Length: 179
Image (cartoon, rainbow, N blue to C red; front, side, top):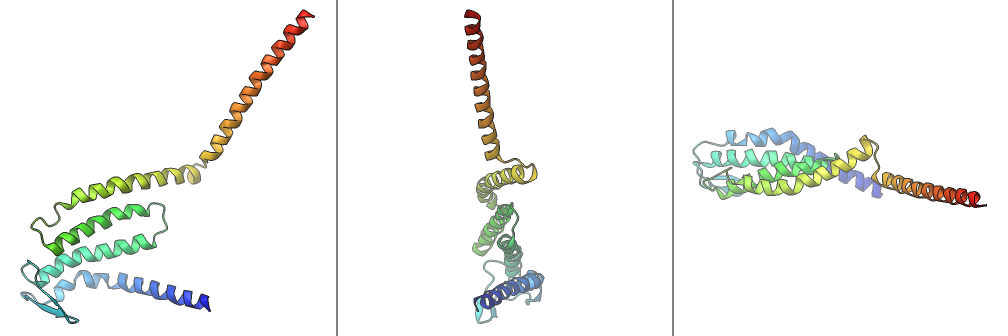
């Protein structure tokens, strides 16, 4: 019974994601289907105004050129199983800051986000690089750092034993010469 619920839930979520991806071009070009020059539009009981833009269609152009790529990137981030998926956070943060700027409608739309993106990048890139180095060394090159440390320790111990043996042999020779 639990498996059926889990399967239904998974199919529902995957279906919703598929529908969102399928309608993303329609959402991206939604502004073309809005009447030009309108200062107010009512969609599903919600009033939308121009928010400082010329009219509502221009406002929707700016909103959806940020929302649609952001939505697709979030879906990609949430469903990715690649080792580098954290790198997707960089364009996600870029579109998020741009969307925030458009909603607030600052005069410098798409200009100051670079400072925030650099901060996010400074955190994400080293993490992704560290993960990559660990995975590439272990799975691509077959390098297991723990196994290498163990082997080095064994080699050191063998070298110490060899030196100890040489000392004992020298002592044995000096004793045999004395006798």
